[in-house]
Length: 272
Image 1 (cartoon, rainbow, N blue to C red):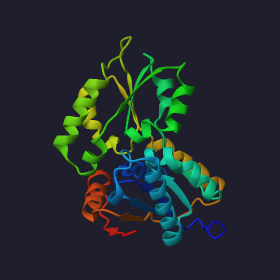
Image 2: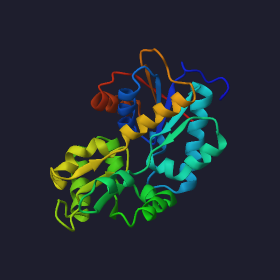
Image 3: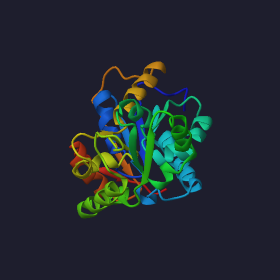
């Protein structure tokens, strides 16, 4: 695979569901000439409430599928849980594959926060992972991080359940707060799941206008560009075609792509 990779090949993007579309949005803005193949493993979600062994097994299957069937020249694991559980294994198994993962943006949040009190929301699998614990421990002297697992929120976003999204955002933000710019208040909120940017409107109702919300799409897109350039795989021209794949509901992925990215693309259903 590695030796046959060409600049004309697509970039693969993988998430447990539709949340990684927030990363695809940033990638399209950064790399408009690139073709992208987006795979939502919705038929086996949610990852964030499963064990590491499950997530690792699914990640390996998905990566193999994208490489063999779609000849992706690079891969973005646009899922915090899969990144935390499996990216070190994928790097070892495919050492020449340009590979980008996502992780909660604790370091940028620490640099931005004035009150030095930062809220971090994510799935239970992500926030409980060794990768995030190591990152958290490395920054403990820079800020206080308040971690809040948001059980059910990614699933509610996946299903576009507005009432449930609103209810869960209210519950978790009330438990996480208080928010504000005064001492002891949280002035920065890290969105530690790629689904959560699509709930930003609901979150904003509870954190207030003065609180920074940080997601990872733009930094991931910039890193993807750097890796493609370094490997000589950056595409010089192209129309930026999008292929959507899902192991779950085609209609759910199509509707999410239309709603959040204004993409009118038919999704292909997979059984694997």
